Image 1 (cartoon, rainbow, N blue to C red):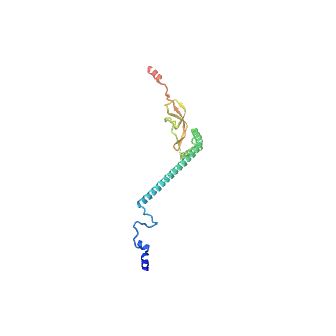
Image 2: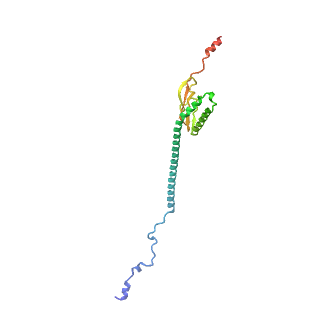
Image 3: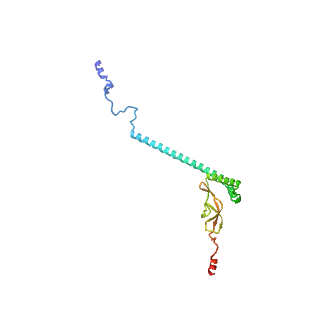
Length: 202
């Protein structure tokens, strides 16, 4: 075998495959992800934002409820403290009021009497500033929510005739009901029919 024949039989595999042949179009570069859908990304971000917004609104509502509850508890605690203080002061105020009511008219102009009256007025203004108000009673229909009947006398049925002890509201709620005497429905007018008949017959 000659040298020329040996050269013809030796074939380069790369030459047979074709070094310059173009690569297939379907082949993708290794290591590169396919492009993401921008609409899907936008929808996902919108859902995240809505979730964050709902969580924030829930937290804000919880904080508002907590703040309101704290304010209510603080207000109730203050009301109870005022009520305890006023309940302890009312007997002293009642005694002072009875003392003034029992002063003889001849002594009303004396300086010490006027001083006690002024103290009573200041005492009442202090109680008013704490939210105290008197429960109206005399001459009104009996109200079991505000009045406590201690006796019944001749008079219009269910009407408060006299106040034995004043009642008071504190902050719109009954602190102490008024102790009252209530009419029993019997007439207090004198029987004059018989007398009138005698005058008519005469």
